[in-house]
Image 1 (tube, one colour):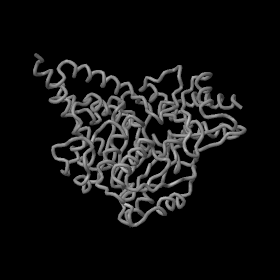
Image 2 (image 1 turned 30 degrees about the horizontal axis):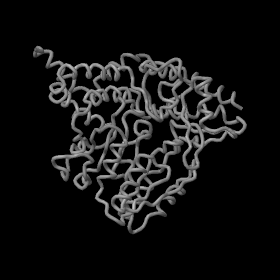
Image 3 (image 1 turned 90 degrees about the horizontal axis):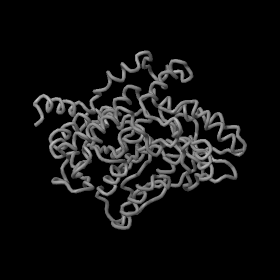
Image 4 (image 1 turned 120 degrees about the vertical axis):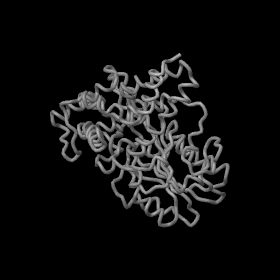
Length: 425
């Protein structure tokens, strides 16, 4: 039998997870580099580079492969991986006891701290497994009827497009498609592209905050304001904006929002977050069974049955590192890294960019194509010759290679990418 002190220690540790329990640990690991507002950061300053070199040590980055596909999924920091391993081993000692009676208590402090980062009430967010689950919960839970219209874009994520198509087939709703010419930095163009599709039958507009194919940032707030003026609800796919762009959910003026925590928050694989405006919760059906499906308790969306409590608890360690870096500083760094490589290949003959370099219209994700070369061939050559991992994108009018650095990416690695691109021409 475990001693009372042992049980007490485990219970206290579980409660602290997600609550910045590691902040002092991170701070003591980087004693020489102060935090500072983003507008005072010089990305080429020696101290700033030293800060990011130390941040790299928080990750187990493979020195032999340059991972520039963080737009797909991001690695977790070492502390998160250690926590995940520790709590997996703990649960395996007595699963139902440690999962349901010990670790389950850690979800509420984690919920509180994620809510603080998102700028919302803890009673409006629920933990789940990824952006697909979060957004599908909303898509399938909305009480839409035959003839109701939903406005969405051809550049939305496939899992969301397919969910809407399923509702179209099953329930007879009408999907109204927005086509876009990307990239663009014309806010009026984006607003008009969506608003022109609104009608008296429009019930909701689906907006992808950062388009995953090329990193285009949409002016969500401006579109949402126009939608609400006509009584239209707003759903935001924030998979590629949360913990990348420095914002709070209320800044978007949306009604529903979902994201993955295993992208730029760098949480364990299979962690996500759903937010629903408090007065909308009761009318949104849970995706899975719930004892009170029409309640206004956000926790009805967490009725998943047996789940990975260690994954949830380890999210707190990733959240701690994000908070230590700071949202403005992180966004500034990611934008700097994106522009760092793009500017150095801008004069390459035949290169085409599908990403706007301005910080208002893109951040971490960049996309380029080479005249006469298929994206798949370019991505294959980058990896086979240089061990640079990217992803080929061919979607609608985008045909290029997506490059997505992260906070652990070094400028030396991006110099190698520049050499590789120049060597192809």
